[in-house]
Length: 308
Image (cartoon, rainbow, N blue to C red):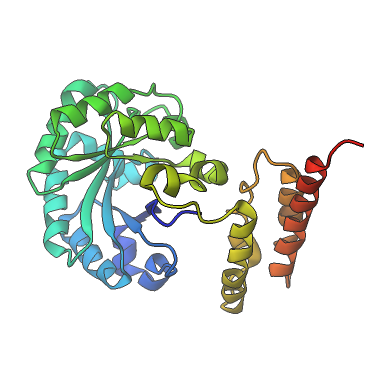
């Protein structure tokens, strides 16, 4: 759908990279770059080791996550809990920068946590961490409440403060400031970029409405020709699906991430139903995806027929 938009992995802990199956955790397909690895951790030596291991996997960026509010992350004293310890974040970032053989080291953070006052703590946090050489920060424009709210609620309940993130760009003009949180359309992303932000990080909207968010991103954001339609994207996925099935990947593992591709289009319900009901069955493969795509195409064709 886009060649230029940067893809971020889910957060992987540094200890998992060090002690687990690094190939399973870090390998990615050649078509995915530019791609960034999100790491979680709070021990500088462990994060540095994870960066060195990740160096063999061709990432463009390694991002230290200082924004995740889950209980499991808090118990390990990393994620959003680190917003209270900027000096430790700086130590972690410095160790990661020293260990990197190429990928840029960046930080993703919140505007604050719990009873912190964001307009006071966020500038101090950025200044402290930037002294290590970190030049790019993705800022989720919400506080994280570590007590009393679930991770899901922390993505929705605390009020957004986009103005504060914009203010950080003006206060730190030499830093790359990327806005995260509450961006629901490509139009909105374009508007924020026009206001001077260096990037917009989009999570749920890109996942649930990928065609709306991504198909025209290369043209509108980067000035490049639009590449494929949603139908062409599906057809381009078929060889990849076949190759993954040959290596033991179940079809449902792939297609569950494709369910939102036609959201709002005629036939979207049939597309979702065919994939949801059939992709988990033994032997399911590209032919099921083609069947689902045909249902979308038929509905689209019917809506375009002139009235008799």
